Structures are given as structure tokens and as C-alpha cells.
Amino acid sequence: MQVGGGTEQTQTMIDAARDGARIVLLSSVGARLFPLETNPIGAALAAREVLLRESGVDVTYLRPNTFASNSLWWLDGIRKGRVVDATGEGRTGVIDPEDIARVATTTLIEDGHVGKGYFLTGPEALTAREQVEIIASVTGRRIDYEGVTPGELAQAAIQRGTAPEQAHALERLNELLRAGRAGFVTDDVENITGTAPGTFRAWCERNADAFR
Image (tube, rainbow, N blue to C red; front, side, top):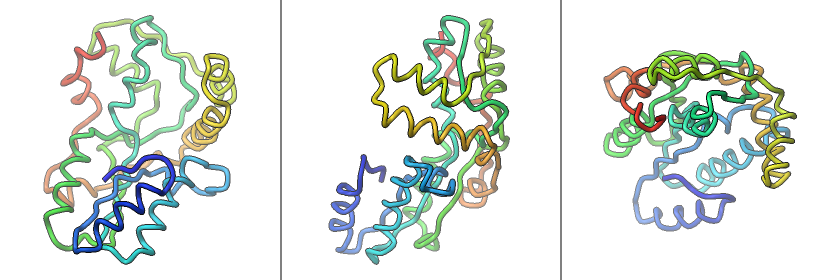
């Protein structure tokens, strides 16, 4: 289950699950990037977890790190040969979405996962620059990396029409990522599914056409 903004959809799922269904919540590592007072995106995610935990229904919490597919947000820059990013030297444990799906399936159909939370990562923590270099290597493109501050990226987003509240929420998240707060890897994917998670390079090779 992945819920939309706010907690209204979460409550709807809770009501539906009271007849004995089991919920696997696709949350995010952001829900545990404290302090939540300065992390609006994480606070929203954490609020959903709290609502589920207090409901008494059977739930498992999946908190994936950066999706490998998030790199598609750079698609316009990749095609123009320059990616602009604000996370600096901060690393994230980039994970293949297919590995998240495998964990979700396993925790939904197997016993022993109710009430537990898992931090899902790939096998390595990468900077955005390293991700761009891998994409360039896989696609054969020349792609430059331009580092900016979270504030600069937020202002540029606002000028392009992004709502200030959303831009500044992303700014706070980028500050945490820039500080390396998500720069860790875990064994949760392999421990749960019995198979090691794939690398970012492997995901890029499998999806190379999407960047062309």
C-alpha cells in the first residue's frame, strides 16, 4: 500500500483492514530522518505510520532509500548533457524498485513481519554525481554534473512554477541528504527475500533505453 498526501487514505485502508487484512505500507527512509520538525516530507510520512501503528491493524512498514528510478527525474538534463543536483557529496543507498516489490510480496504472504519496519537499500551508497557517471557510462552519453545548494535548487524550482511550500519541503529534504543522513546500506532485502539486491548500474543497464 502506498497512500497519497495526508492521512485520509491511510484511514480508509485501516477501516478496510479491520476484517483481518494485512497491510504492507510503502513508506520511506524519510520518515526516520529526524528532526521531523524541519523535514515536512518526512513528517507527513511518519504521520501515516503513527496512524497505522495506533490503529491496531496488522501492518509492516517498508522504508526504502532512494529509488533507482528517481534518476529519471534528471531525464531532461541527461538529454541536454548536464544534470543539476543539490545533494552534494551526500550518499544514499539507492535501491531497485523491483527489490522493493519482492520485499513487499514476501512480507505480505509470509508470517513474522507484522509490526516490523525495514530499511530497504541497494548494496552500495552512491552520491548523485556517481549515479550520473554510471548513467553516462551505460548510455555512452557525455553528462556533466552541476552541484548547487538546496536553496538555489528550490528558488529555481519556484521560478519554474513549483509551489513555494513544495519547493521548500524538497529543500529541507535535500539538506538532510546532502548531510549524508541516508548514506547507509542494510541487509534487509537479502534477509527477507533470500536474494541480494541489485546494483544501480544493473538497473541502469536494464532501463538504458529510458535515458535515450
